[in-house]
Length: 202
Image (cartoon, rainbow, N blue to C red; front, side):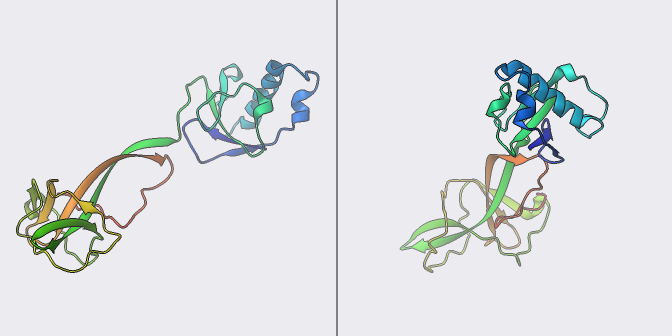
């Protein structure tokens, strides 16, 4: 049994049951003939499906594994293996690179006159007013932040004071630090909410 996916997608798979015996009949040693039978059986199973709704040409069918490698030897396939089907097009990964912009709230601690800033959890009760006018861009950690002298929790991540920050004009003790990263996300998944929150439109 193989799980057949449309090129570039990771949902809507179709299960195709093919026995090795069916592929090996009349051509026990010729990989090319076995591959031709595998392609034909998959093509027939996909007829009228969302993967092949318009009767695409069998001669252009290509199979790929999860690493984007074209499958050319059916003997190397495993039961329940995921296979991506393309009709004449290059492999497209179901994982899409996305630019992730994350805002973390930052707090600061006074250590014998030395200010140390840490990422912390965004206060769910904090009033984050939308709009550029309610936020100040700071080229380094703002000096008017009221630091505290409590013990720093071990799980907090230290932040360089020379980074850029956003400071709330209504409450100067609400300071956000932005980080940008490239992540790969499933084409069908929705962005999951985490401990960090996306700041309002600013």
